[in-house]
Image 1 (cartoon, helix red, strand yellow):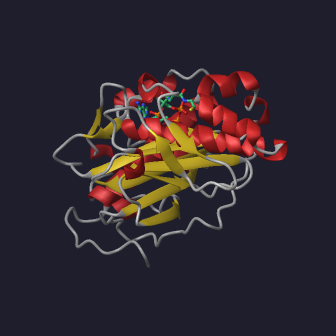
Image 2 (image 1 turned 45 degrees about the vertical axis):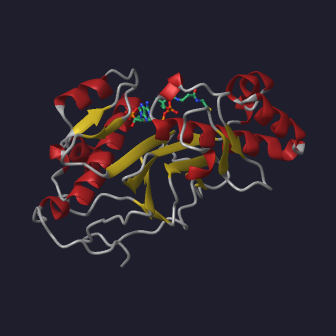
Length: 275
Ligand SMILES: CC(C)(COP(=O)(O)OP(=O)(O)OC[C@H]1O[C@@H](n2cnc3c(N)ncnc32)[C@H](O)[C@@H]1OP(=O)(O)O)[C@@H](O)C(=O)NCCC(=O)NCCS
């Protein structure tokens, strides 16, 4: 098995295995999971995928990428299965016109999610009744170059980046990038959203925020931006439409027996995740 590039997981709490996840309206849940796992667990996750999902994953050239794609989709199905009290294989997905996955109504009405993977990790965010976007990127110093800064950042953002001390610029660039991408992913229109049509706050001395949006968009101050605690090698952000009263960060792992989730009755009381 390959070495897993590190994310310090101390901040990410491990929920009790048996508990059912539930989300209150002002809460945001974010789950971190490693895509590297033993073959037996990969097989369990693969077993809950649809034929189309397996076929899509199989289009990746390398075996490692195929496995990662299946694992990340399997993790998403297991997480959704728990929130919705459904078997992972029964989750009804629907995509918007730009490919953003969501849940087909009426089953998933209200539960919104978004996923991002980078290298060996996947992060999945959940919010109730609000648009949510998540982005995680491995910090690659060579990417913070002038050409990409000019391409991805709005002129005011590029100007702010260049005003920062040299030692801070790489992290600041990735902070800016992940906040912008999480915002685009929350809106769900992907590359259709022009990167210079909005601005985000970033840098050691700035609180995470959306500073400016295009006309006819939800006002900048109505969005919440949250930094993810991913250590020095990764940057990550979550953006939700509306306030984020409470952020909970969890580590995901497959229950010792995958039957644990599948054996749960369809309708159960809704205990809090805190345990
Ligand atoms: C589709 C897009 C959002 C994916 O971003 P990415 O960084 O390549 O990949 P991530 O791992 O963060 O996200 C991929 C996941 O986002 C979700 N996704 C797909 N299309 C989406 C969309 N239009 N909106 C939100 N989420 C989307 C899917 O769950 C996907 O997972 P999958 O590939 O396993 O199905 C991206 O191609 C895009 O349009 N990015 C925004 C524009 C940009 O260039 N930003 C640069 C930095 S500012």
